[in-house]
Image (cartoon, one colour):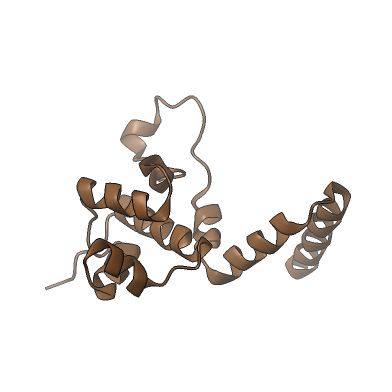
Length: 135
């Protein structure tokens, strides 16, 4: 018997929960305590293994101080529904990257740089390094 893989939407919502939790430096245990559930349940939510119900998602949104819609930003859209969209959804790799500790650390550090010219030079540097990697 094969194990059923998580639904892409459940994985996306879970990764957004993880990203936001990490953004505010909250542990899985602390989030679980605030919700009255175990950190293991938080892990399952974040991996998309367990689906988050509507009322629980509302509680998570309140604890993490974001609107419920935050968890669906950039969510994958099934092909059958995508044909009526006026603009394509944001690439999943962006939210996947932001859900990693490196992505979050880089984003936090980058946002602290106030000078727009310095930020542009950082982007240019990273693009240059990436171009060298392609060779």
